[in-house]
Length: 491
Image 1 (spheres, rainbow, N blue to C red):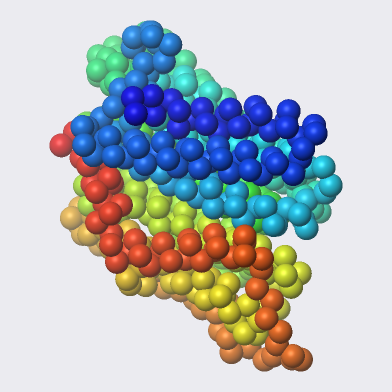
Image 2 (cartoon, rainbow, N blue to C red; image 1 turned 90 degrees about the vertical axis):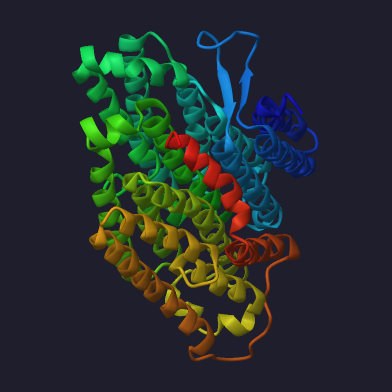
């Protein structure tokens, strides 16, 4: 389907336009529009995957304006990979939401919830396929505004303050993104990423400080968006108060932030600049190492399950950034594969935590005693997802960390290999204490089964099984990740 690159983005945007109109009279049908829109995005993403694997990179001009003057959408293996991850996880989060919001969301808010959810999904998909730097900024603004609105949707204590802090910090990030884009346009006269990559070496020769300033702006902007330590201050509060499915979508926000950084560093600035003239890659590696260790240690100290998962996410963004910093084929493969493994596993963990709050009304880790018997399927999924997060074979989380370790060995960075191992051990301790309480904690009173509704349980189990299946059949995601990495490295 030749129009799939634009349709994958437009499907959720059209749904977001229709839902407010439909909600005026038939709010109960808003979910079905959202499900249809995200389902179509999955279908178009699969179409893109098939086309890219069969014929290579797809170039799509919007409105008939040829690049570099018009907006160009570029779908290579990595873009198709991101579209599939974003659309599938969004579909499962939306399916989970149907039962969840009936109990948690105030009356009359379903229309706003599904509208913002689709705007968020559309913005993330737009970032994934754009080949234009200004369009990257526009799509980033769209999904950011939707995220600000979704965080306080349930009206929980502290949610409006958390959303406001997120708004301030993320707005600084997007402002820097716009400034960086303007600086590059000033010295190159173009916004098209491929055209920028061709002109930037000459621009750097004549205006090195302008290019350096733009690069610094991009690093901070995407560092904030991806919650890279120490630019992660917004994330713990947001994940703690956000509804469980919104927390899942927020994990996609950080992954797309990391993807945007990958695109700008490798597709615009290029390997010779970021590994030679400007040592960005080594600096990212050490920031990532700090994120892995600091996030894991702080997660170990938490008593609230959502806050624990939030700090664990800070650590695991570090693994993605470590792959970027290594800037070799094996390391970058591991970092991008970790985008998938973390989206699946952490998405499952957030949905499990939401199910526990939905059924049992608890969020303190000490109160998880005996939940393995009261919610056996949910807690089994939690355990499997936790195994993937910790990097236990044969899960997909193990495979991503394995490639990262191989990349670190290839560069001779044995300290980073030790950081990967230490981070995995700390992560195992973080989740082991929860699992021990679930299955071996003292139980009081009758242990009645309290599984969540089927509409919430199916996405949980699906994500958990995906952690195991894609670890065993890792060649499936690597069929996209491998060619995508080779394109990034110019191989």
